[in-house]
Image 1 (cartoon, rainbow, N blue to C red):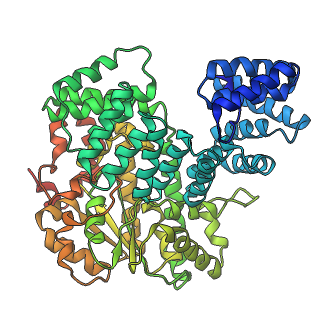
Image 2 (image 1 turned 180 degrees about the vertical axis):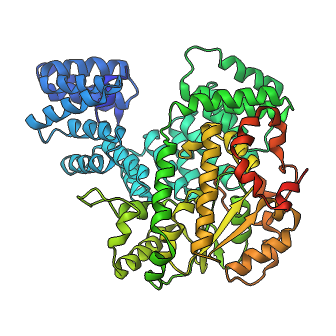
Length: 594
C-alpha cells in the first residue's frame, strides 16, 4: 500500500526544515488540532520523510473522522476496488462537498475508469477551492494529457512547477507534455531540471532518452537509457526502448541480464512484457529466429490479456461504414466541407512504410511533418456524443447539414494548427485513419490521401514484433492481425470503388525498387513540385516519433524485404488466414526480395 502521505497535498515551497520545526511546535502546543498535524505531515512529506509523515497523518486522521474515511477510500482505490472507492468518495462529498482531498481522489478514481470529462470537472472544482494544490495541478495536467489537450496540460504542469520549483515530479510531468507536443528542446530542459532536483529519476531519464532519440541524437539517447537502467535495472520499458531503436544490438551480457530478470517473481507484468519483446529483438538480431519467435509470442500473449479488442466490433463498424458511404450518399454531399487543402493523410497498417513516406514529404519545402494525429477519428466519433437516441457514427452523418461538414473540417484544421509550422501543407500519419476516408472527404474534400502498403506477411509480422506505447490492440494475436489486415484491404477496396482516384497506393516494395519514380508519384498526387531534397530524405533534420525514427535517417535499404521469411516455419497459420490478400498481390510486391 502507498503511504497515506501520498493522499495529501504538499506545502508550496520555502524552507522545508524550518517548516517542519514550526509545525512540530504547533502540534506540541495544540496536540488536538487536526490542522496542525496535517501541516506537519505535509511538511515532512515535502522533506522526503514519508515514514514520519505517515505518523503525523495517522494522528490527523484520528482527529478528523472524515479523513479517516478518505484514507479508507484511498486504500480501496489502491487495492483495485475502484467502484467501492467511488461510492465512498461520493458519500464523503455528500457530507463535505468542499473537501479538496476528496475531490482530488474522486477525480483520480474517475480517471482510472475512463471518465475523463468528469475527472476534469472535479479537479477544476478542487482547484477553484485550493488554487495552490500542487498535486491537483499535476493530476489535472495528466487528465488533459490523456485527452490530447496538450497545450492545456502544459499550462497545468507549469502551474505546478511554479508552486514548487523544487518538485522533480512536476518538472518530469511537464517534460512529458512538452515532448508529446513536439517541443523537444523544452522537454529536454524540463527532464534535466527534474534530474537536478532528483538525480537518477527513472521517468526523467527514460523521457530524456525518448526525446533525444526523436531528434536524432541516438548516442546520447542510449546513454540516458543506460543511466536509467543503472537506477532501475528491472525497468522493462527501457530495455524495450533500446530494442525499439531498431539499430541497437544487445551485447551478450545485456541479454543475460534480461533473461535473469524474467526469473524474478517480483517483476511487474508491464516490465515483464517489455523485456519479452526486447529479448525477441535481441535473439532475432543474433539469428536465433526460433527463440526470438518464442519470446515474441510470450510477450504478445501476455500483452493481449491487458488490452481490450473486439474483432467482431471492428468488422461490424466497417459494415456500417461501407453500407453508408455509397456512391449516392457521397454524390448528394459533393462540394460539402471546408476547402482547405493543407492536410496530407498517410494511412495504412503499422510497420508498412508510412514513416518513410512522411519523411520524403517532410523533406519538401512546402510540407511540415507532424506525427500521428488523433483528431480525425475523434471528430468522427464525436458526431454522436450528445445524441440521446443512441445513434452513433457513421449513421450520425445522415442528419448533418452542409454547414456541419464545413464546421467539422474547420475544427480539424484549427485543432491541429499548433502541431504545424509555417509550410503550406502538413502530414497526418495516423495509420488508423483509413476507415474514416469517406468522412474525411466530406469535411475536407481537398485533402490528399496516401495508402502506405506492404506485403501482408511483412506488415503483420512487423506489427507482431512491436510493443506499441498505446493503441493498436489488434496486433497482439496473429489471427486477429490477419483478420484486421483483411478488413483493412476490404475497406480500402471500397474507397477505391466509391472515391476513385482519391487514394494513392504506395507499395513499400515499389519504393525500394524505384525510389525516384515513386517519389515523383507521391509529389504529383499532392500537387507538389519536384525537389531534390525529397530523394535525400535521410539528410532532413526533424523530429521523428515512430519506431522507424532511426531507419529513416539513412538511405533506403532492402534488407527488410520479405523479412517475415525468417519466421516462415512458424507462420503457416498466418499465411493461410491471409490467403485472400496474398492472392491479389501485384507481381512487383510478390517478387520483391525473393
